[in-house]
Length: 260
Length: 222
Image (spheres, rainbow over the protein chains, first blue to last red):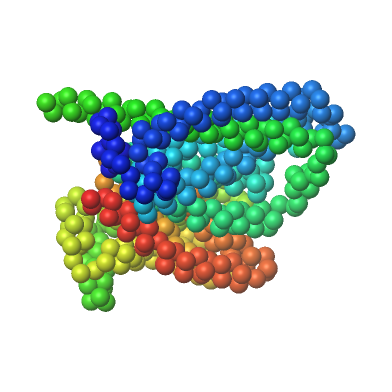
């Protein structure tokens, strides 16, 4: 409700406890100021790290003795997997914050994060499939990791669909917050069950290839790409929250005009 | 507290019972869907024997899911959900009673129909008892997780399809351990651990799912 109350462009009420920045950020004007400050930094870090990571990963690092040049896809694949899981955790945490404190910013974080997380999950699945074709000779195997990433992707899709199904954005936000929490409780169980299922059904030929010890020269581009992806996520997050706040403002202005 | 709780379950059972064939639709779906598999993959008995545990569990899971959107929908439409929410029973127990009633009207008939279908699909005799036990433990989990999904989508126009998208990924562990128990029994590996994990899942779902479902119902009733 706080978003709506402040959205009409009136000056915000002074906060009682100025020290608690998390609550202070419930004020959209204050959040927009912070977002504007973060934006160029996130954009710069994302651009520099991703470009440097790509150049280093594609041209500088030597090819693998076994996999040749095909292994270079892990510089996209592995950071995308980390981001897919980190973003789901952020969605679950912000869902908890939205339900407990009714924090309007937490609502927006969940909504803004979901498509980015789904995209990273999809990139992870896609690059894994592209790598699997030359390495395993097949586009897809029902490996434990692939399967649990696929289920994570479905969880993202369910979250996005539930959020979009409500006409009232606050209701949609809180419903999907509940779903994110249920999913977060379930994710470890799903992961465990898929691991168990996989070891029963398949011999462990693939998992040996799955976790090769990595050469030290390959770590630098991996870390660069990881930092770059995180900065990119922050960039998208601030952008999407900003546009959401502005969209709600426009909606409220229109409603106020129609009521006149 | 026990009185209204049992009364709510009894009311739902009476409603389902007097609804006639409507409440049996999910069992009929279970039978037809399982019967489609021999038509799809061919009638070789060895092949059917191999896939029978998985086919039976997947079809039971889908049949249980299909009837989920009726759990709160009708009560929400005619306003009785508001009446129930105003009553003495906390919403958590309302959600639990609804899930139990759903299991009694769909899960239990599925369990009873499963042995017949198992014969049709040529399931190994070693797997029969474990199939029934695993369905007995596993299908209440489906109803409990389903109550969360049903509560989340109760006020929505096209809730049914969305409900399946929300609930199916969460059903994955139940399916894996349910089928795992039957296959372990067939191959003589010991089904105990699978059934114990299923039991643990049931206890966890019994405790946690009503809270999530009640939170979602509160939101729908706002």
